[in-house]
Length: 392
Image 1 (cartoon, rainbow, N blue to C red):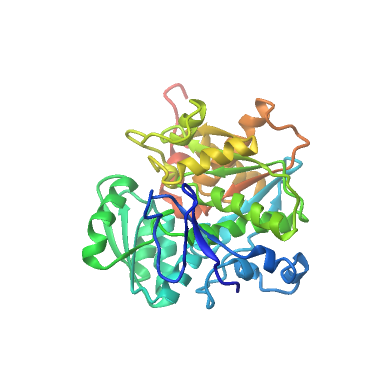
Image 2 (spheres, helix red, strand yellow):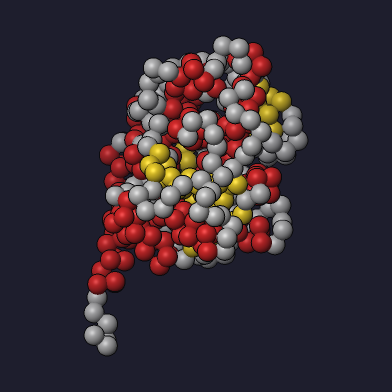
């Protein structure tokens, strides 16, 4: 593995060393990105270097942090050609350990936490990040302190408790959970691994971008549709494209990056539509897609900048549309998607209808997790659909 050259603030550009644990830029609170000496790596780390490597995200070890990965086999998830729509691919992240894309970020974050000798990690979560933190912390022998809204899917709560994490259920949203972590972390001796409050979860998530390129023969698609709560995966993929270009693996072309959110919590879409560079907290956030219930993403300024640079856009989906799409993908593709992932299908259908994409455009839709995490929500939706109406 390559050593990290430095950590760079995405706001002011200041460079910090990575010798000790870091959270955000001490000057302006900007998100920190890990930077590597890609010029030096270019001569030895080539696309051909990947041949025969393990089918996990750690096949890209030269551009990942740490020397001894805490791994449960995350990454290199299937890129499934759609059985119904030509030029559409489903990247099925529900087949990761803990059944979501969150496994990637927590594998990298916990790897670095172990390398730094940290003993207690804490994070707020809408569900799947909590499961991933609990699992990887257990694998690393580190204590995990997790704060989740009390109405998270039961699978997430049971998972976390089974892994031995300390779980606090909060009467509120993920923003309320984050506030509680912030208030207690210094006194309790916790290191905060909240979304974008440390530099390494984005490093794990960026491997989705490396995989998109590798699995499509090193030719990036016309578009990528990404369900966006905190948006770490979108940021990570964009970072990976820059790194791959610097390594000589791809050219300057980029996909149109598409953010999809629930209409019950759509701060990025609202900011995009209003031409703003940052979002405002979404009041009374509510959606059955728990991972999209993020009233304000910490990295919103980066998300909106990427949408602009890529020629992308931001789209909303209603809960009925999302849950219908869960069933549609299951019946036609054999993919039992999480509601968040199914939102990508809704977005694609809307963007085809508006002619943003044509039938000739290659588009990757990210299913970010497994529907098995959301059985209560999906079962309730199916029961409502099958219930006889008054007229029948």
